[in-house]
Structure formats: C-alpha cells, structure tokens
Image (cartoon, rainbow, N blue to C red; front, side, top):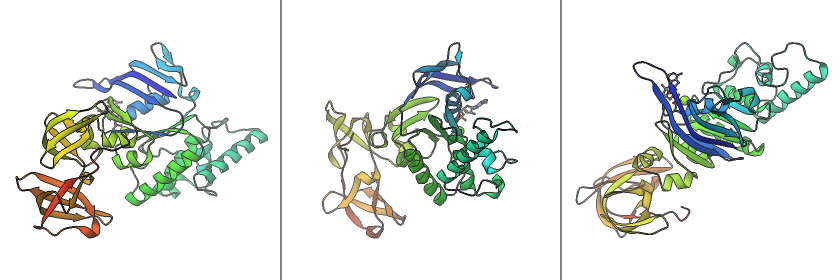
Length: 354
Ligand code: ADP
Ligand code: MG
C-alpha cells in the first residue's frame, strides 16, 4: 500500500530549523489498521500530511500501490491519491450542513449546479455514509448541532465517501471523554473492517494503539523505532525507552546466563533464573511488566507498601527484603493488606507468540 523510505522533513524555524522527520521507514500493508504511535511532537501529523499530499518531504520517497507519489522531482496532488483524511480537530465546515460536508469530496463537490442524475448519486452516497456511521437522518443538521463524537463520525463519513483506498486518521478520538472514546474507537474499528478499508491511525495513546491496531509503528524523534504486531511490540520492545512508553515496567538488576537464537535470554535476578525476551534485557537490567509478577505460595518474600484499586484489577507496590521495589497487578478483590508479608514470583516472562 504505502511504502515510505527515508522520508525527512525540516521546518525552517528560529532559533534553529525543526527536523520533524529524520528518515522515516514504514510499510503500510493493504487491509487492516496500522497505528503510528508516539509521544506528542514526534512527527506523527507531519508524516500523515505527507502521506495525504498536503505537505512535501524534503528527502526520501513515498510510494502508493507501487507508484511514487512523493520523491525527487515527483509530487502527486492530494486529490489524485485516493486517500481520505480525518484531521486531528474535527475540521468540519461549520457553515455547511452535515450532508454537504460529507458530499464535499464527491464528484461535483464544489459545484452549485448538478444534473439530476448526478445529484441523485450524490444524495444516495451521502445517505449511505450517514447509515454507515450510525447517523441516518442527520444530514440537514449543522456541525454545531452535533456532539463531539457525532462530529467525528461525520468527519469519518466525509473521508470515506469517495471510497479512498486508504484512510488516514489523526488522533480522531483525543478530544472525546474517556467512555465515549473507547466506545467510538471500537465502533470505528468494526466499521473499517466491514468496508475492508486500509487505515493508518496516528495516536499518542498506547491503549488505543494496542487494542485497535493490527500493526504498530512506534515513532520517536522523527523516526520509526519499531514495527510489529501489538503483542510483539509490547512483549519485546526495541529498547527500554520503547518499553516504558508502551506500558508500565519494572526494572530489575540482573546478570545474563545465556541467550538462544530465538530472541530469548536467561537471566539471573532477585526473582531467580528467568527466561525473558532478549530485547527486554539492557546490559545488567531486565524489564518486566507488572502483570508478569504474581503473589503466590512460593517465591521471594516481599512486604506490601501500598495498593491501588482500579475496579477491574489493582496495583500492588512491594519491597523485597534487599530493598528492591516491585509493582504487580492483582485481581481487584484479592489485594493484600499494607505491611503484609507475601511471596512474589515471575510468570509468563516469555510470550509464546513472540
Ligand atoms: P505530532 O503530531 O507527533 O505531535 P507534529 O508532526 O505535529 O508532531 O510536529 C513535529 C515537530 O515539528 C514538532 O516539533 C512541531 O513543533 C514541528 N512542526 C510541525 N509543523 C510545523 C510547521 N509548520 N512549522 C514549524 N514547525 C513545525
Ligand atoms: Mg499531531
């Protein structure tokens, strides 16, 4: 679908130019949802705008379905790319009705006078899009008469109306409140799967990327630092910074015993000898996830320092006898009391899927 090679973008600015993209390599495969995940300012929007054709790279090449759309001496205009985009802030035209917003990118979008057959085709397509995003009958409203979630659905309908071969979504849920965000993103994922569209979703939200995407590209400082399935990037992050960004982590001092050719390393640490993903070992430190530790009948003695109840589960802070701090996840109804002495062991330290 998209093949992105060595893409750079430098914005002239004072006191010095901003190197927003420093050589991005990324493959977006047909079908499915690719999430570009990274902290604010790492270059996500810049990359998306280059894919859409709203901006030009200073270096590198972008191919769409095998043809160069941006590269040395080549630039294909946005309307020739079959790419839909949902911008970060809704960006609906406030003076146009919902139907006119959705119809904007369709043939004859800007023209006031249309032949009847053309007009009918447009109206049908707009109706179809309103159905698709669950807003039938909303065509006459103005954007201001819709909730935030409804506005984002209209923006999605507008992007999908011309049946683009790929749709780009720039943090489309970030302005919504937590409950609505989860609901709408599930809905959008199902919808995109149903119409079999390739999508690229840009987000700074780890949960969103891990739960929605088929494929994750982790971005940092204008580069893609890791690509893979959500399971792979979470279980075997490229480095410690990636690990910390993708979720909570517990770092323990260790010594390496040996490593095999399948990405596994045996380490010796305060919790015993563990087999872990090689990428979770950095020098003399091993990174574990809190859910890879559990309170059990056997294990290393530890004292409970604090617990946090989250409903669905809880977080337990502990201290081993030698002072090492640990955090682990436990069932919400099985949280130990503070100052209790418990035993801790590591479980599921290597994921069979990685
Ligand atoms: P993200 O979407 O990941 O938050 P952006 O792609 O918006 O990041 O921005 C990446 C970097 O480029 C930031 O440091 C931002 O300030 C800078 N930047 C983006 N657009 C411009 C611009 N038009 N002029 C100057 N600097 C820009
Ligand atoms: Mg952005």
